[in-house]
Length: 311
Ligand SMILES: *[C@@H]1O[C@H](CO)[C@@H](O)[C@H](O)[C@H]1NC(C)=O
Ligand SMILES: *[C@@H]1O[C@H](CO)[C@@H](O)[C@H](O)[C@H]1NC(C)=O
Ligand SMILES: *[C@@H]1O[C@H](CO)[C@@H](O)[C@H](O)[C@H]1NC(C)=O
Image 1 (cartoon, rainbow, N blue to C red):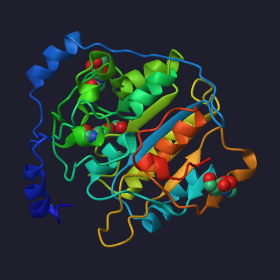
Image 2 (image 1 turned 135 degrees about the vertical axis):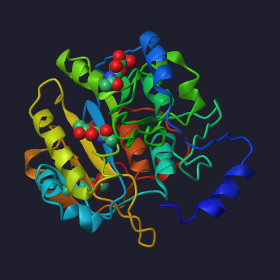
Image 3 (image 1 turned 90 degrees about the vertical axis):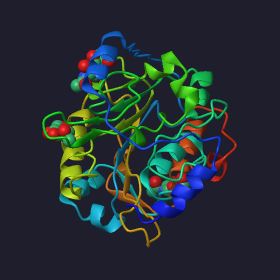
Image 4 (image 1 turned 90 degrees about the horizontal axis):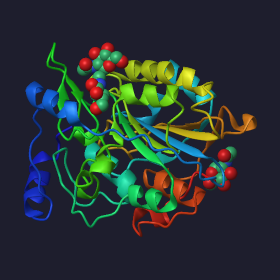
């Protein structure tokens, strides 16, 4: 959606401390070279939380609540957990929502661009590390761990992996740190970490541009979500008192209240609450509030402070 491009372009250029450029796909040769030496880390930990011991947020793209809630695959997912019927995104378009979900503010990110937020700005990563809670970001089709570019399908040129849907990549506090970059991994690593029982306690997952619904439909996104989550819901390496949050970044319609379809599921959800709804007012900052409260972490002093935690 580019409705406000002209306005936000002017605004972004006026924001001197936040460098930005347009997206272009990284060249295959550069990817190949960097992949050979890319560092990958798979840290684990077992910090006991108040209501869950692992948190997983998986994000889909651009859909209004009612349309997502009517999709048969997403309906099935709703039957496995608690549907949050009053959960709103922060803004439009996509990137500021991802940025806000880990940083408690959109930090002047107004558009889908290569913004770089000053190194002094903290995110949930700082809080998790202080608390000893292991974390990783899993992005489908990210070309190698710590990849900072964008990637298209080499066969058909379709957008495959985009930096704007990776919540931590806009933060210099992450990208200036090799060990943090090493925890931004692709789905190959997700499955090898799962197999080796080396998944962390906090995860953010983004499917590729087809599977997340961005360049496809809610039917494709829903089908992917069901296919991806079904085996995980009974996998002992994944379900360790785990709270999974499935959500959408923003509504498709820019003129409604930005309500998005969100379900909480996983073995942290009591059997009696499966298939129920919760109409408490939540938003993407609730993710931070929930994680901070669960592990007794500090906070970012931003949107996270006023937001309601899921539990
Ligand atoms: C995923 O990342 C690893 C580690 O950097 C890399 O070796 C591998 O080629 C990547 N897989 C895909 C499908 O891009
Ligand atoms: C995204 O991944 C699926 C497999 O899960 C693949 O079929 C699809 O082609 C990928 N999307 C793009 C744009 O390559
Ligand atoms: C809904 O959320 C509120 C706020 O966290 C909580 O107090 C309540 O127990 C939740 N209800 C259900 C049914 O999960």
